[in-house]
Image (cartoon, rainbow, N blue to C red; front, side):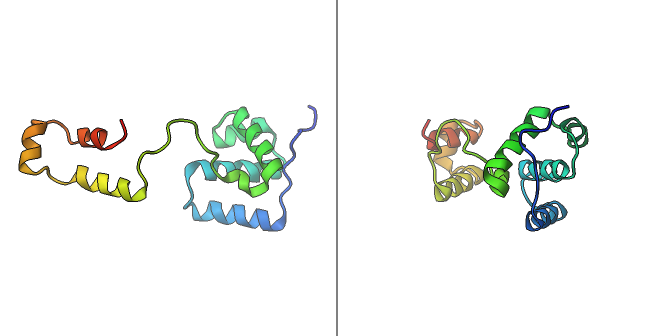
Length: 127
């Protein structure tokens, strides 16, 4: 088998940060998966062995190796995802949730005709 194009060699500090992250388990699932992949790759496991241990595909492992080679531990962070930009900021989102979860006032309840309050979300979003 040819040598990997993107080798994972962790510094002592990187290794410590990754193992600490895995022990705490307070990060997002994708971030923990990437950390687990990097630790196993640094231990010398092949992509196929890592695939079986972390239950993911080889493409994910190769992509994680490549991102690590380019950005080191920043490779754990999420990249911007495609799609429509958010219409609400954090404050607007908090207000929307509060409105949707509160009981509808009398006039609004009559206009909605007993329909799901999820419609309120559609009305307030930039739909």
